[in-house]
Length: 287
Image (cartoon, rainbow, N blue to C red; front, side):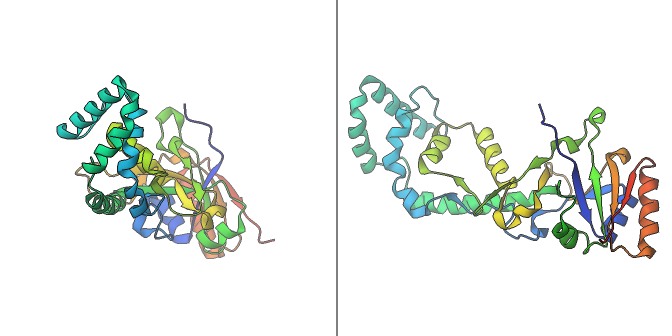
């Protein structure tokens, strides 16, 4: 069940307000257009230095296998056969772990240099793949002076409240909060988790977890935004787009910035009331 969302607002400059209210669409940004150019990217495969992680890759393998003796290995047939043989050997005699470690050192399942190159390629591939997502960013921080300054043209723009229509199974029910961290996330916190996912993981679930970590994590310098996100991937063969329509009743409040010029105020007010006759209008004071 989807949890109850707080009131969420989209800050817009005057032109963005005209387009959003006039066209009945919200702009969903592609990652390359974000202010934070590292947003929606992954830093590395491992939290450790890649060379350090790969050095322990083979030595950690037997212990990971020993913790997953009943799990079905994935991958190519040759590797699966090797893993199954190791599982059977450990089941028959747990004391053979040291022997298996020695044997894997002589003939490792993974080639360290090949894995280094593969991990670098994987990071580049993931970051390129993320450009196929479109993101709508909102916030509960309606009263943030900084948000009005940075995203609503220094108080000359607007904030629109978005409320998803539950009866129409609105996509706006799917906003999720962002988690803030000291740096962009690595795909794996440790080498052991990488091995477990690589050898035994469900590929679809693993990829879903990776994408979630990338989409819903930002660095702490953006923590003041208290951001919520709606992510929408481009479908296979779909032409790139940057706007999606909303139901008119889903924009429920129009907050007009305290510094909006009078020449724009009446036009944007009319656009809002034309889009949703029941929209609630608030004129913010500069005090």
